[in-house]
Amino acid sequence: MDDEVLADEFDRHRAHLRAVAQRMLGSTGEADDAVQEAWLRLTRSDTEAIDNLGGWLTTVVARICLDQLRSRTSRRETALPETEASLPADPAPAVDPEHEAVLADSVGLALLVVLDSLSPAERLAFVLHDLFAVPFDEIAPLLDRTPEATRQLASRARRRVRGSSAAPDRSRQREVVRAFLAASREGDFEGLLALLDPDVVFRADATGVSFGADAEARGPHAVAETFSGRAKAAQLALVDGVPGLAWFQGDRPRVVFDFLVDGDRIVGIDLLADPGVLGEMELELVER
Picture (cartoon, rainbow, N blue to C red):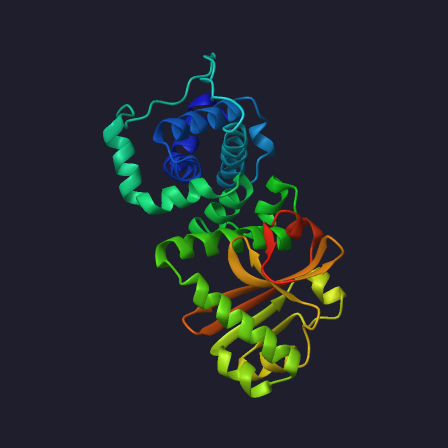
């Protein structure tokens, strides 16, 4: 592919790449640097071996942004070096504070603030999947994780985003989860039903299924049957700051129950047992 054709092909994907980078980095200036670096890497690659240029470029930009996010806490970013392969001409004006304001307006200032509170891995999983519909099996290799572990990273990020915008009542959520645990231990089927939303869904990850858990249960009766008379070893805990349940063996978490609560009803429960996922969670037992 000659240089002119390659530049034209790259330009077709430029807006998408900038949008990904802007949401990953929260800065139009850094986003443009990331897009430029992607162009430089493209010019050094065997383009004939690239089957899906758009997907390849998205992956490259995501890796660049992930590296930048990981390095923010240890050093200031340095400008990209000048090279003989310059970025194709961009009709957009130079970056200035007005364009930064446009970014904040288009993404949402509150969302940008919340995204900054996420870990780099959570941010990448959430942005690529929830904002750009990239499948988890394509995101997972970027993070050296399984698709299931990547899905949980996005789920945690999504919960934080929702929590920041909805300002949930944590004390009420804690009471709902505490009541659920008590009803589960006592085998109080009717008590469980009263706490479950009509559309409640329970899911277990692959490790949890290997422990004997059902992969999925839908509806209050099915979920109540899953928990009635069980969870005796579970304890009330904060899971990334959100009320949930955890089962520890010694000092190590073995299983976490991640709850999504809306008002007085539980709408979702995830059973998480993958050690890689649990190792990245912030867990704090509320009651021992």
